[in-house]
Image 1: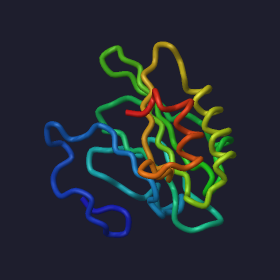
Image 2 (image 1 turned 90 degrees about the horizontal axis):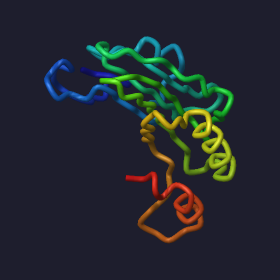
Image 3 (image 1 turned 30 degrees about the vertical axis):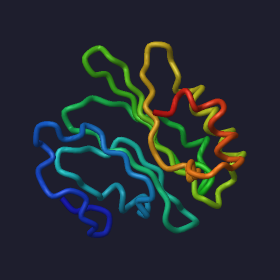
Length: 160
C-alpha cells in the first residue's frame, strides 16, 4: 500500500491476521480533499483534521472496514498548530473504546493545547469507555523542562 504522496508505509495485505485494526497518523501533510481521496486497502477514514491556512500538520484515523465506528465531533476545540486531533468511538466484544489521535506543533501554544485537551477529554471520558490517546505532542521527555512538568503532573497516570 502506498499513501501520503508515495511514502511507502507498509508492503503487504491489510487483511493479514494480526494487522492493526486502527491506524493513527499525525503530520500527514494533506488537505481535506486529498485525505478524503486517500485509500488504504481494508480501511475506512474514520476521522481527520487538515490544515487550511498553514502547510504540513494534520491528523487522521483509519478504521478496519470490519469494525463499526462513529466519528466524534471535536472540531470546535481544534486550531492549527496548537491542537490538531481526530476521534472515533467503537464497540468491540462489548468493550466501548474511544481513540483520540492528537498533534501539537513544536511552535504551538502550549497553554491553549492543555486547555483544549482537557475540554476534549471531558467530552470523551465515560466510566464504561476505554480511552486510548496517541499522537505527537512535541514534548521532549528526555530533558527536564516546564512543558514536561506541566503535562506530566495531571496526565502522567494516563501515559503508558
